[in-house]
Length: 152
Image 1: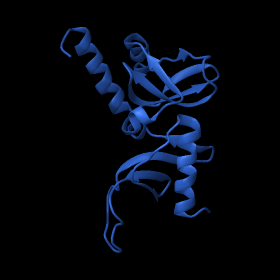
Image 2: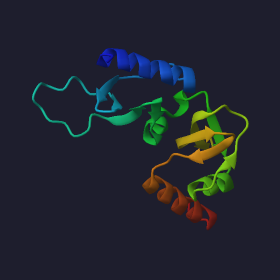
Image 3: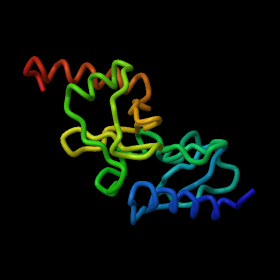
Image 4: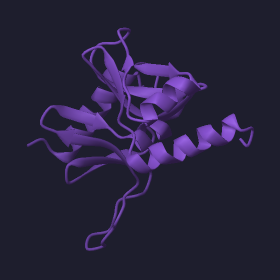
C-alpha cells in the first residue's frame, strides 16, 4: 500500500490530469478511505481530531472520486471537465434526472452554474448524473426556486 506521501502525489496527479488543477495550497492527508485537504499544521501525536479539513477525494476500487465540497473549494483551479449548466438543466439533475452529455468521456466532472463550481457529477454512457449529496441537492433546489420567484 502506498505511503501517505505517495497517495498525496497520486491525488494531486489525479486532480491535475482530470481537472487541470495546477496548484493545491496546503497538504493532502489520508484518513481511512478519504483524502483530506488541509492547511493545518501537523497534528500532535495523541490528539484526536474529528475533521482535518475538507474531504477532497474518496478512494475506491476504481480509483479516486472527488467530493462535491472538494471541487467547490477548488473552484477556479478546476480548469478541465467542467460542465456549465443552465438553471433548468441543474434543476433536472437535482431532481434525479440525467442529461445527454456526449461532449466528455465517462468520468467525474465539475458541475458549474454561472461559472461557479457547485459540485460533482458523473458522465457514464453519454449521460450526466448528479453526484451531489442529498442535503446539498435540496438546498440548491430551494435556492433555485427562490431565485425563480425573485428572492435571490
